Length: 391
Image (cartoon, rainbow, N blue to C red; front, side, top):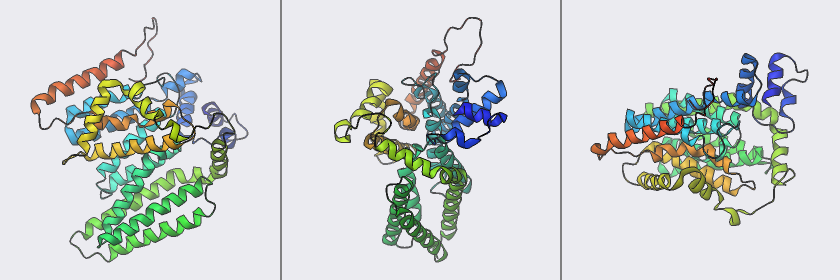
């Protein structure tokens, strides 16, 4: 697809963009970035396609630092940033041109933006969240496996908080969640009348949220208005970024999904009851290993304790969401789970605020190990000075 897009950029294709999405309507943002690199450098090799992923590594590293720094300080942020490219290159992803690294970057960035938006009260972070959610959907629709359920939960909680009575907020939040589910079923071609049901339910939830704010007489009325504005801004930007593409390719996408579910392409159906352990086994044996698995368990327990870190909680919710949805899907490949590995880093990096004497040595060791792992990937290449991926 990236080669076809580069032909479009050069004006060498008479069929235009529609020829580049046959027979599978994959979103174009990752191939388009690669095509831009081909266009600028004149190099159309796989190596250049891999090098074009550098921008996604930058996003991953910057948002890891920003998210963890706000919670645990600059040194913890650096340690998390050093681990980012390490987990991004597990399995056979390094040197391969897949969408998993971009998915990893936008998933982590979206969670950081969600946490920093403080329940959509910050307009700037809410807008940035909308941009990254739209960009994630333009990377690949499987982005919704990881961020879909958490975002439905986050929006439902925000709408529910706008109500003056708790039970009323719960009802409206539930209406919104069911509406999103109906919209997804309609988009996937699983429920023909789901679009009408989704429009009715989501419209009712939106009107209710506006009424809650207009009738709010509490001292925090300004906060409710900021929440509603941030929420609306986030949703608007998601629609503006990803809506036109999915509106254009929806018939092709529905056919693609139904073909996959019917196994017209390849594969053998294995029910989830017999294969539920596949992705947990991949995570433990092929991604983390024993030391990081122990840290993940400790970090997961820590998120359930009082004073838990919000970033770690939402990151874990997003990762478990992707793990469950992938486990229920008919196709299984170890690299699919890699899109969520970046979400584990805020859980893995220890919060040592209660033990300051351990803080500097432990975080410094994590930082050093992350940098050493990256340096170890640079292969001997006499006479050449190529930039390794990652940095």
